[in-house]
Figure (cartoon, rainbow, N blue to C red):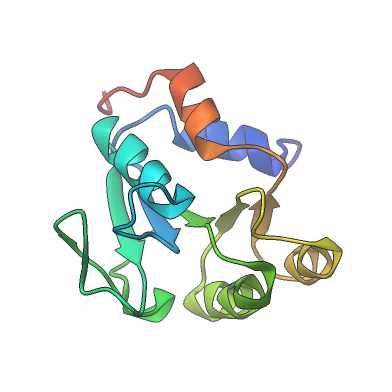
Length: 143
């Protein structure tokens, strides 16, 4: 990554490889919810996807972590699919965990969340859907 790349450009580069580890905070077993749709889509594309949901032991058969701090490192992208009030706490957790890139899905942020995110040490993607970008880049295994 170069300093001139936007967070979205940085994330797009990461999404070119299926070795990219993505944590979906707000992943769910409710198949109609975006946390589940995104989790299944990214998993089906071959990414290493880990769910975070304090209310569910597993998501689609994969062990779910209760907090971002519990997720084994390294983590390349944290994709957030939670309501804005919850997202604020997730941003604090991401900063403490040393996450470098957070992707805020539509519906997970408001103006206050964006202000908090921009003050954090990580880069933030917003106003873009991770599934759309992942489909566009056609991820492949690393060389």
